[in-house]
Amino acid sequence: MAAFSIACGESSSPLHILIFRLWNQTIDSIKLNVANLLFTSRIRTDDDIKPCSLKNILGVVSDQCQLRTEDWFSNKNNSENEGDPRAVFNVLDSMLKENLDRLKMMRESISLARVGLMGCTSDTDYRGHVDVIRDLCLGGKLGVALWLRSKMIQKGIVPDVLTHNYLVNGLCKTGDMQKADCVIREMVEIGPTPNCVTYNAFIKGYCDIDDVDKALHLLSTMVSTGIRPNRVTCNILVHALCKKGLVGVGTKLLGEILADDEGKATSDVITSTILMDSCFKSGDTINALDIWEDIFHTNTQMDLVAYNVLINGFCLSRDMNFAYKYFCQMLKRGTLPDIFTYNTLLGGLCKQGKLDEVCYVYDVMLRAGVAPDQISYKMIVQGFCAHGDVVKASEFLLHMLEKSIVPEPHIWNLIIDGYGRCGYLDRAFSVRDLMLSFGVAPNVFTFNALIYAKIKGGNIFDAFSLKKEMLLNNIFPDVVTYNLLIGASCNMGQIHFALQLYHEMLMLGYEPDLITYTELIRGQCMKGNVKEAEELFAKLQKSGLHIDHVPFQILIMTYCKMRKPDMVYYLYQKWLARDERVSPL
DNA sequence: CTAGGGTTAG
Image (cartoon, rainbow, N blue to C red):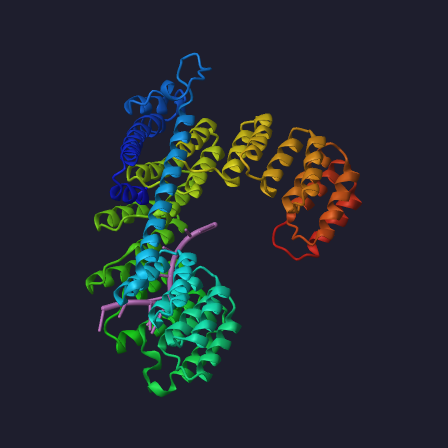
């Protein structure tokens, strides 16, 4: 939406202003009404309230927008003469998107045309070119940036190193290493000669795609062409090597490259931060704290990221008191916590189920003027859902909507799943409808959560039609979808349904997992088809999947009921031979 | 003082 406001702010086209106004009204009304209708009245008062459908909500919304649905659609198959408000919003949505895209394209071609037509007349205009390339690179429009560069070269003007570095960096950041490689080759041939920064960006690119060998190879290339690696080069490589668990190799390399800098090799805050982070993540808190003490004594000014890494380290080792201690220390020393700091604390508290403190930290960050982002909300919502408090989780979803942040699908899914799990089917579906009305597309996880909810509510046929619905929306089921439906079919004694699904997934190339086999074994045993169950168990053993105690348990219980002590004994021995803690009995 | 390095969730 931010992009939209910017776009409209710059445009004077009446159509865009109209759409902009409409859009704002719509969002505001949705916010208000959703708050009042769905969350406040329904969820707070709990227990058995008449479901308030999306239609009602959007009916009010569209009334307030002076947007009678009848004006938009003539097909009123509804006795109340309401039309389908959701359709209206879908149409509105696509209109907005279309116009936005068109506007964006227009603006881009205008600015390009301006550059292309009048650019190549004087030196000052070439400076303009270079700025455009820079902006394009920063905005991720690398195709256009490259095109402009080639245009300049055609006219005999070669952009400087700085501009080329923007290009190389942009290409590497988007993972387009081949194009980056081409640009660098051309730089070597026609200039400007790549410098240390060029190579650093290139090396980082390979590190990011986990090709450290290639990165190290580039290091030797740059050395052989007479470019000395610097501190930044080191940090990139040390970071990559630490991530691979090669801390020793990293520090050794550091020592070699920076040998000339005498003693300065370890005093860099960034290098230390990388090493400290790596220690914390491998569980070596003692070593991490040693590094911290080292920086503390040599370098009085600790920076924000170093504090964040330290606090995160304590969250990882579940030492919230220490995390708080250093949070306070950073405040005292005048380093203001940022979104990373707060999210780190929130994540640590959520994992430990300290939800009161989660609310407290959330409050603190609001008052400190650090706006919670999608990550903050994701963790909080997940935290509350994991502890069965979906109502509280929904309140945070509402906070997001109030702040005009459209939650990512993941957040909606958590709430939908949460409601499904505690049996609030209607609420699960209302939230799904709300998600749609905000233009957020459901994904496999959404459908799986809904299917789960339907199955839990005992409505297996609705669950099956949801599978059809997802296909209509071009969303493909995954193993979880199949497992849910197979499990439900088995529990209802409809083993043929289950087998049909099993064959369908095999035909479509899905790999059955432990759950698939377990559910089918359970289903066959329930029907007394022990031979079939045994065949499935054999198939499971041959699959190479890790097998837990559940299939053993099912078969042993079945043999017990059938009074086959020899088979019970045989399977139990087989389980014991695996040397695992859980007993299937 | 304009290009390159470190931190948060699935």
